[in-house]
Image 1: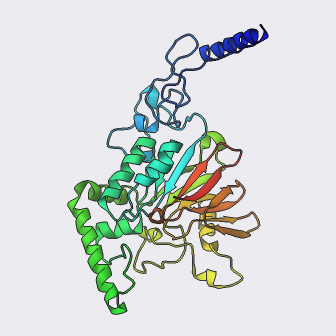
Image 2 (image 1 turned 180 degrees about the vertical axis):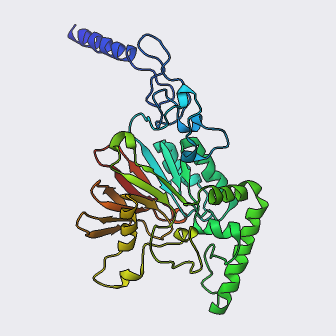
Length: 348
């Protein structure tokens, strides 16, 4: 008898819970209808949790040929009036320096399970298929793409950059010829692929600053995390291309600079000074070979943590996040479901 009563109560509670469950067919945290049956989610197929109060994502607010965050413009429709009104917290995936590695592993192991709200790709594609794969991801999940130094070199020609691995048994006097030949082969593949080649040209021509600027999850943190996303850095040392000129020089900047050779001068000081002058406290970048978090505190003290690991971003510090090359499996995940955002540097 007692077991029957308990089972009845449990079944009743379960029934009530199911009855009052809020329908949200696309999982964007905007209910399909309200308690009276009125339609709430005006974009029922957003496939992202970064949506406005109508359930509409940035991708649904823009023209079909629009790429990423630069194109969230008001077109007079109530579903597109405010691209900054977001629902819930955000998961952002960042990857850089693809160098021809297919994105299939990233999609299967990271993007599909996480279903991120934003994706940032920081350039250096090296193969046309990588351009198409990255562009499709950013269009589906929202976000943006910035060009890298390899993209600039392949589009404009000129001095070749080293693409791929140089064979260990190659004599030193043959290295330049090998690099030049490999560069020419890849550039010819790009020029033969009009979609990829024109897209790289668009990135370089329509975004002269070579950056994406904004605020990390403004709905959660207001303006405490003023952010810039780019491939290289704001200041540093031109270790990989001594002939580059502004505005493209920053595509080649590494965080090292001429003052870093002095023992008393901490690493990355010059770049932090540039960030401070621009009123930024967070920079997300690629280009360098190792994932790294560098932070400068209010008193000017600099700390650096290199390698995979989890980190908390403080609104009181200046911080650079180097995601590492996806070519070697590195990527970053930013989670803002916390009082202070978490950045996880990972490797497949």
